[in-house]
Image 1 (cartoon, rainbow, N blue to C red):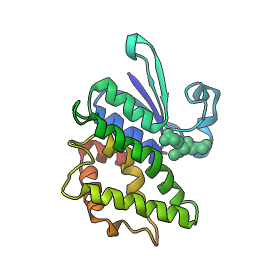
Image 2: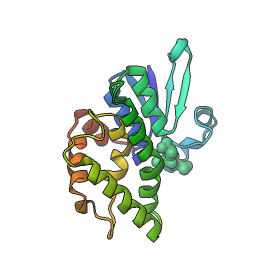
Image 3: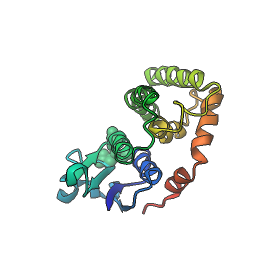
Length: 195
Ligand SMILES: N[C@@H](CCC(=O)N[C@@H](CS)C(=O)NCC(=O)O)C(=O)O
C-alpha cells in the first residue's frame, strides 16, 4: 500500500488530492509540522529536506521501494503509475508545459504573495493570473482534459487572499477553481481533518 505523509497545508493537500484522484489504496500518515514531526530521523530518511509531503511506494517500478518528496513530483509519480491525468499523447506536451508553468512560477510567486509585502510578488501574481485567465477563456481545464496541470496549481491559487490581488478580477480562473473544487476527490482531500 502507498504511504502518504502530509499535513493540511497547501503543499500537503496538493499531494492528498493527487492520491485521492489516483484511486490507489493509500495510508495517510499525518505529520504535525507544528510539532516537529517532520524532523524525526525516520521521516528524514524519507525526505532529507524534512518537509511534508512525501510518498512511499513499496511496490514501485521493478518491484522497488520508492520514496518521493516534493508535492509536484508526487503528482507526476502517481500520474505515471496510474496512467491518469497526464493527457493523451497528443496533449501530453500541453500538460507538461502548464504543469511546469505552475510549478516554477505560480507556486512560488503566490506563496510569497501571502508572506512578503512586496510589489514584485504582486506584479508577478497579476501577470500569472492574467495569463491563466486568458488561457482559460472558453476552456474547462488547462489542457484538453482535467490533468495534473489543474491539480498542481489548485490549492495555491485557491488560497490567494490579498487586498490588491483579487481573484474576482480573473473570472475564468474563479470558474476553473469552482470546477476543480466540485470534484469528489478534491472535496474529500480538502475536507480531510488534520490534528
Ligand atoms: N516544494 C515543497 C514544499 C514543501 C513545504 O514547504 N512543506 C511545508 C508545509 S507546506 C513544511 O513541511 N514545513 C515545515 C518546515 O519547514 O519545517 C513541496 O511542494 O512539497
